[in-house]
Each structure stands twice: as C-alpha cells, then as structure tokens.
Amino acid sequence: MTAKPLARPRQLALCAVMAAVMCVLAPISVPIGPISLTGGTLAIYLAAYLLGGGWGAAATLVYLLLGFVGLPVFSNYMGGAERLAGPTGGYLVGYLPMVFIAGTVVTLTLARFRDGGRRGAAIALALQFLGMVLATAVLYAFGTAWYCVQAGVDLQRALAACVIPFIPFDLAKMAAALAVAVPVRRRLERANLL
Image (tube, rainbow, N blue to C red; front, side, top):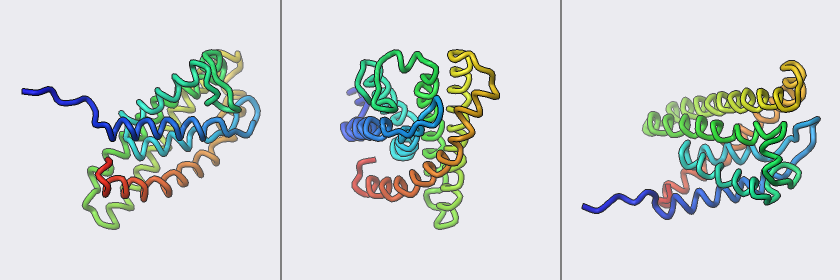
C-alpha cells in the first residue's frame, strides 16, 4: 500500500500564485490614520474563494513569512518582523483566521448548493458574502484588540481609527472579490485545476 501524497502539484502551484497575488496587492495602500487601506483584504477574499480555508491559510502564511523576513509585501511596501509585532500587526496576523473562516464557508456552500440551479447559486453567493463579513469581523476583533494593547488606546478610539472607516471599503472588496472569483473558480474547475 502506498502513502497518499500530501498535496497535488496543482494545489501547491495555486497556493503559490495566491501568495504572489497577496504580495502584489497588499502593499498598495492609502493611509487612513494609523491603518492604511490596502489591497490585502481583497487578496485574502480571493484566496478564500479560490483555495478554501486550508489552502487559503497556507497561501496567507507564505505571504506573512515573506513579509516577516523583510520583503516589502506589507502596506506601504514595508516588511520585517517589527511590522508583525507592532501596533498594526494584529491585522496582518488576523488574516489567518479570516481566510480560514471565509474559505471554509465558501467550501461548505459550494458543496451544499452545487446542484441547486440559479436559486442555489444565489443562496450560496449570499452565504459566502456573509461568511466574508463574519471573517472580517474576526479580523477586526483580533486586530483591534492587538492595537489597543500595543498602542495603549481605549476601544472607542481604536474602533474609530481602525475599523469604522474601513467597513464600506471592505464590503466593496468582498463584492469585487466575488465578482472576480466566481467565474475564475468555474474556469479552474473546468480545467481540473481545483
């Protein structure tokens, strides 16, 4: 009896591609107070939809490790361990539970509503959007708690600086990610890459 391989080369390649997408999108940023509006969450939403929870978390971990060793892949083209350990590092580390939760919801809804026709697809899409909202709420909670401790500010100030201004942008990024990822995933499945 032979051992089952841990991963197919295609899965590893897609994981690497999504880590690269994160490295390209995340540094693009617009400062809004102490936290920048970045393409990072958009890349995380894409990874969650295309890779699912486990592989999405793997791609995110690769991205974080690249930034940890100093590659300029975090917001404002910065990198290094100090970015992860600093006041805004909780939002970076929070990408891991975020992608896992959103990716797991996507995987479960795709399995449950695969043969549900248009109505099933609409229900799946709504649940996937809600899964991304839940995952983002976890990111906000994790990152804001970290920010409060590291920056020494109270919760109200942290929410005003780090969460409330970003909610409409993140909702728009979720919609954009679904608009892009749904047809891309269909094509990848047809090509037997997923």
